[in-house]
Length: 438
Ligand SMILES: NC(=O)CC[C@H](N)C(=O)O
Image (cartoon, rainbow, N blue to C red; front, side, top):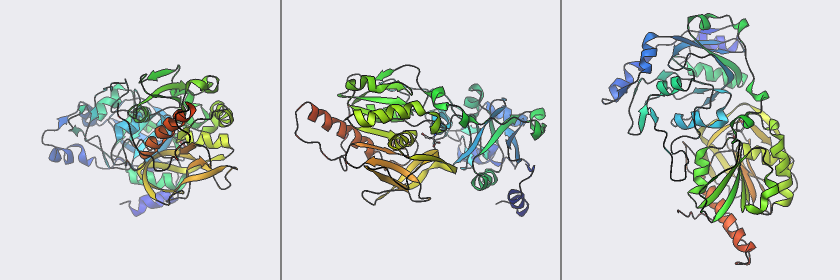
């Protein structure tokens, strides 16, 4: 519970300093739960009580304890309500440039898994090669971890990845602030001098002015599962590996292309086109929007997009985008399918949304957020072109909408058979849900 004083400070933000709260779980909660838990070396950091602070550009300062790298960083402070999946969230390239605050109080209790790859060379437990967010902020860091897949602690992982991590702060108070004033530029500083440094001297860098997609996208085309029966071009704006796994595990060969690659020039090589998730402001990715605009009139095969893919496809179709006050980040967000009326629980991570009040001719709303009414997807009224704002690959998160991958590959197969003259018509996409395991 926030004290009355803390609440008043939120209503009247000035240069407010929040003291570290008792770091309760460090020695008690996790000790009791996990009899066989492994102590982490990062406990050493915590035991030394190296101070760290989250400083918001709007003047509030949250003092806590470091359990990661002692590096100062700046970014946009955002929060996620996900209960599990911190290894996946932290390696999601869409978090590039952001300081990630977890509302789930206890973080780190199941450690961090090994860097293993599947038979196609895709990461099994992470969404990309390393931590993508700038820093993490938690209420209660578990210095003891226990899980059969764990090879190191969260603190060790952050430290060796040069990512600052801060615990012992009142994340409820931070979320109240971010909900009220919106996602805010922030810094994490570590060490006595850095923490006590005056806010006037602090530098706040806005990541959304950079083309973050260019920073995380592959630099050259890469193929996976070459023996797949259909070939999908994946425009990599910062693609999560579980999206690639969701396509290869359904039998597709995929070619991951740089964000600005002119896929239209080699469109004949592909049976379908996918546009991925990605970080930052979609208006910085105009080359991809331009390529998609061309594809909408020339690429006569199925197209599917996720998250940034939804924003870029919508912009290519003629819709505008806007920044949401604090975005939707979590694994429990309801969205209503406008075709069937059914409600699905979805995994989300986005700060921008399509403005869908007036849909362009030939396009319809696909999904709408049941909490705030924002757009959750669009589809073409007659062609197999669609995209969703949420994450059907769901890592970690509910699997309600994984069927969208089944539909996409089934549609591609049907179109391919039609092109090859093997069937007369193309089956309707809705309801097709059969996956092909290799
Ligand atoms: N996960 C994503 O693809 C996020 C898209 C975009 N960067 C946003 O924040 O809205």
